[in-house]
View 1 (tube, helix red, strand yellow):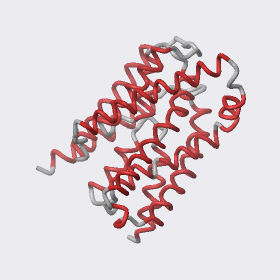
View 2 (cartoon, one colour; view 1 turned 45 degrees about the vertical axis):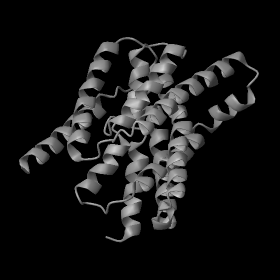
View 3 (spheres, helix red, strand yellow; view 1 turned 45 degrees about the horizontal axis):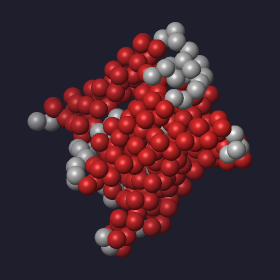
Length: 265
């Protein structure tokens, strides 16, 4: 398979899965670990997530413009403050993980288990919140919890950053649309910071010399385009649907992967 085609496929996978509650990291690792697609660098897998940020900024252009032009409004400052706190929780936790040199699992079994368990978690939260419309207002408790939820996804590939943050907010009483918007906007600084940190680390360690920058750029662009389509669709989808369909998908995928893994031995 040509390198450019593999990169395009991985870019599509990243863009499609980044904001769905099914884990983009897990979906990037699975085809690479199974040998279906050529193995890419850790830098590639992290940096192409930045393309998804472009999609969020494009879809939420009106909302972002409103926030930037109403900084004098107490409600705007409150919302941005809560986004900042959630991001700082994730950033601080991420730095602690780096300092402790915690090795993140990248093999199929942990990803499969996280995918499977995440499906049952979605069912549980959906059943618990059934019949409850939820509130629109973000609380400081929700902001802190959502930041912590993103860390959970960082430590366990297959969890889903967007899924964990949306479901955490819903579990604490937020309405689905508001929880989704907060999660998506929080993804902007989170993904930019993760990509920037990884890029600077690679530059410092001299790893950029081994990186094909044109392929990195291609993957990022494809990720941005596919994420734009998915984000626009998901914003409308959550207005009238639960996440149970994604839960079934996770259970089938996680269960199938575990059966495959344990029948190979």
